Length: 357
Image 1 (cartoon, helix red, strand yellow):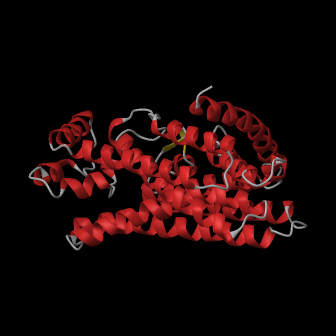
Image 2 (image 1 turned 180 degrees about the horizontal axis):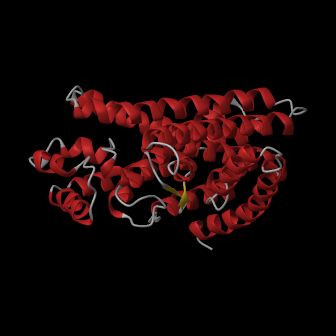
């Protein structure tokens, strides 16, 4: 098997195991007498199902870099997946998304219920408030899962500390993701600060949350050293930034993201594509369409055409590949990771690089 086949084989085995664990958690989650609470826990359960479970797989892979008994880290992998769902609930409120994982979002399901007997504003306010509560519920449920599962583990304190730092970094990234579009529309962003802030989003909201966090949490549970953690942080930052650039490209071009097509355009999302188009003669034409409320197939096609004509999409693709290549070089220089695990991590990078959604 080549490296990507090795990773996919490993991933399938881990996903099958974690799917079962997640299903058990979800069934216990909805045991609730109060019908209003139960209904929304059911919404959370639905959203908490059918995920890719890549982050949970990375938790177990991180643990296996130090110790082979991976079942020890299964509950930590479960907690990380619950954390991801909770963050998505909050993200959907912020982005006003109606679809997530090809399902109706929690706030939108509530909105559909309450709009029949409340004004639109009142229905939106109460549905957002309910979803906010459910996102908070998920965050603390993840934390409780870790605390309950590893209360006798001497590494619990380090794991919780790092896990909560990942949560804080994710919130920082989300905060910038919310602020930048408004500041850009108002013309208050200088180009250097804009580019720095976009990379900060990539670093906090993606690299740490998606790549570094799960691997390092698994390593810490296994008793890993600060020196090894720094190696993975350096490696994971390159992978994570590449992953987010790729996500931004797919956000414009892909029809298989599990979200509303073209939602990045409607949200005036601040990306490397956006910051680079501002440096070209296509800027004014691009801004006629980017951020429009009336998102149509024609608008999406126009944005795609401008990015291709300006070569901005290719520049983003080149930066993505450079980052992925850098991560492979960093990985090659890490002497303490054995050959088999390096092959899995290389396969993981190639798995990410070839994705289309």
